[in-house]
Image (tube, rainbow, N blue to C red):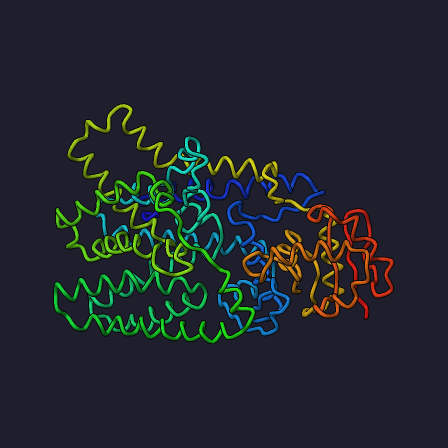
Length: 524
């Protein structure tokens, strides 16, 4: 009971954060409970397409399948093993994919907050400062909304509006992969530094295995972990000439080598090689980061300067956070096709340095924070977060963005029919949003699905639209592309009425053929 009393502020902060972070989901759940004619798919409203890909991984885990790319019909080999999604899929056997997705997201969010709190205890001795720093990390945001309000046509899109990795609040809102990855990134950093600082060799196998798990589950973490740690190790060696630090780094490099060799082997599979070729997620104009982080950008540089000048970096953990914060500007512009992904977790050290700067300025010039200035700073830091909470809550409840967060009861029954009818290796001809969502509920491949994971998705979308509305014999084309079934709905496929001619063809068996759905089997 004494711990609860001592940490009352921490518990209140966590409850408030969880409530606001999950308010859009709660709104959607509330509406679906009160409307039995709809099903809520609980998709996040940032990078919605990715959500259904993750559900497809969980669906395969339920079926004990070591994951394959269901969004490329040519992906024949089950080569991709993701221990996170496979484990979630195993647990989902006892509930549902969606429930488990969000249950693990919440569980890993709490793990992340616990790990972050450990770091803050290493930086701040004062309890209230730790609370304020934690609140700032969880809620601080950029100026993306303000920027686009005044400069909407510049081609610059601040990252806090669409890159969840660059923002702690959005990261924890999106899914379990991101909350877990940030928790484990902090854990690997903590274990590595503690092992070196205290000569605790028993920590080596722990951070070796955790980092290997991370590299296999989310390969971008290989760079995110190795780059700042290597820079920090070189600085430590230059200052202290302790060669043993390279021994600890060796084990991290070994886990990186194993992870790298795994992906080198994985990309021998043609479908994975194609996926890598078109998986371009590179950073844009640097202003997208400046405005995406907003005041955090400015105050983090002030905090970095103060940390060096005031010798706060005698604190080993703060020194590392300084290295991570500054090296982040290099990482997101490394000559890699996925450099934007390297912003994952970067928000954390930037905000900690920003908080140090604000706390120092407040201590030295408290009068500056009286009146309107403190309000301006608070609004600048937190406005975009509150804006997104309200926006996503409205869009979830009213489905006002056309995000299709609800589906009909009929769709659920159609999916059940398809699941009972099709074998796991079946290939379904469909397109656009239909193809993005189908593998989330049925362990079958689609001709076109998620745009990044489907090779030449735009070309195939146009091809499919032309093929299945042609009113010509397409049996040879279906056979050539190994198509087993055809599926479309009025909600996602605008030309559905022009596809129904296929039901009269001798090589087609109409399993479902009503006003809103068609589900046909190709029979040779």
